[in-house]
Length: 196
Image (cartoon, rainbow, N blue to C red; front, side):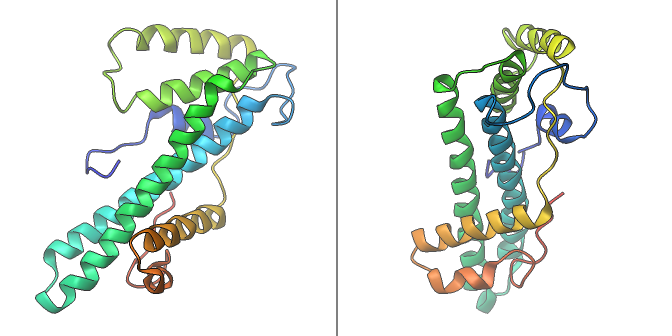
């Protein structure tokens, strides 16, 4: 998460594109199939974590290049951004932990569960090793039968609100509540959180 090699998984990106496969006669409501809500929340937490990772990386670069008097402020901003990313990643992990206890009521719910599994472990394991090609094959087959989960990228205001919430939690955890407002996305010194 916090390392510079972190990248977006293909599954997360393709799920957000609208119009990817129609749902074939299955309920689209999160209430009708709880794994759909889990997938939506997991993707949101993953996206926010990635946004905060990019912010943390920019602040780390600034902290390394800062002049001595500015170093403490730069390190403070970096510390809060780093902890905020950890908080967002932890939220995604908590959602993953709920997956085994969440029952699917349709094939589309099974697709949603597999999307989380494939998306979660792709960053850790080699995608060419067993069982990943096999699981992806099953996921493709299920999508052919049931369709893809119709999710869209969360609105920018929601992502920014989540970023602010995690930054406030981070500031609280490291005892710097007064600095949380200074580090809100889009304001100095947290210069421009890119939500795309």
